[in-house]
Image (cartoon, rainbow, N blue to C red; front, side, top):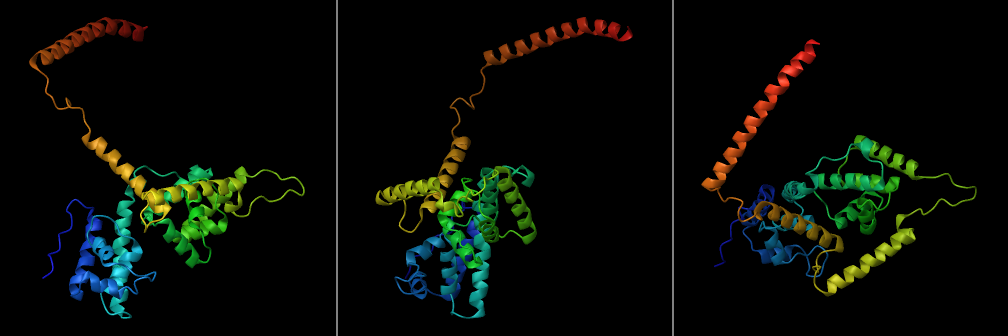
Length: 316
């Protein structure tokens, strides 16, 4: 007899709980185990394979699982190729996106810049970061796959530089990113106009015969040096175990930012001085009341002295 499943943590975010509850419902309707679900995802060393522990953690509700894991879970919970599988994938994708948007809300706490206020590559990167959060905070690997499927691949490193405001995207790169962030065609025209305005502002008149600069952002020597530093840092963190085997360097950075935000929130909510709630004693209360009485008396005397003068000035 298998152990009973633990309920979803009540302290988890509501949309994350809804996703976990739906995944558990699929498993119960299929009358199967996580081991069987894992076998249905494919061979052990295939790209789509998900282990039993990975599927179990996805339905636990403690953290947001990757979208690929959720879709693999939905496909494995029924007969392949049927219309029901497509419906399960669509529902799982919808619930995952809602939970991802809920997770990305810390990036949307402040009001974003208006399009006319976006005048630098850094501000454009901030605006694209907000669009990414509204799209469910997809990982850089997911962005690379989405842009590749759209016809213009934006590598993870390039997407990281663009969203970080370090380089200005080309028109093709911006179009691919906007498509990956579910931006409509009408809004896309606005962002292309913003991008062209930034390029015109930072461009300078070229001398006759002068080259047009670097076509790709990754060809810039400064960008190459930056990428080399990132690769060395990633290698060190992987050897020391700071980066999990199943996550990228960008995923590690996202996890660290989320951890820092959670620690800052906890410190703001709970780290209060010890005497914050200590009541005033009787002597302090009487002294404060005496100060207020004295201040009111002085204020009344000053008002009585100033009022006749002001009235005379008005009559004059």
